[in-house]
Length: 291
Image (cartoon, rainbow, N blue to C red):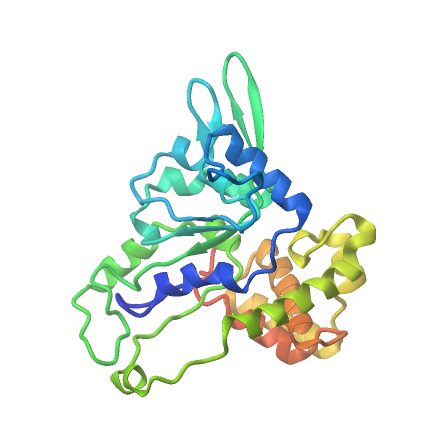
């Protein structure tokens, strides 16, 4: 999420678990094992029954994020297993700390090797990150003037590497909330309504993928994309144009298709339509042309 200070990025991230499906029994067992290993199971509870929400500070070390120590123990990515890992002020994290997330984002697990042993911890989490558009926070704002130079903006954003951006499906701009909107007292959809729509989409995905041992579109491999995510001629041309103009990588290509399939599932559609694909492409706003 990209937006000025006070636009609600942190609040949105904190609300995300409220619209996610409840933990299945198997997911609860896996999460409880991790929390039991570090002594974090809530007192009086046999199982962790709610999806984790972890929000480490930007001063965290790579060992704290990924796991490690003399006696290797799970890090934040594993404590967020089956839940949400929220990284606020993303460019403020040390670059080497961010780069070590690439393996768990890709594989859903992390391996910590020491001289005496090598341990693998599960780490299938939803990464949510937030950042300002520039160091002062007001680049592109229609009310407050940005005081940053173009070089400062570019240097600030370059803290997030291209390979890490490739692994983030949605680049969402969160504009500042206008005063009139604050004063109306109107509210959007309740979380319960959104959650039911998410549960229905997850059930569609499970019905399609369960025979392959998968439960969500994010887990699909190339052979599944060819089977379940076929694009018509219009969709093929649209995606080809986007790939060329935005300089997207092969990884971004597969993530756009997976996201299009999810957007279609949320809508209850059986096939990917052009407007599903257009929406997914629109979420790649931070991609850069890379040679």
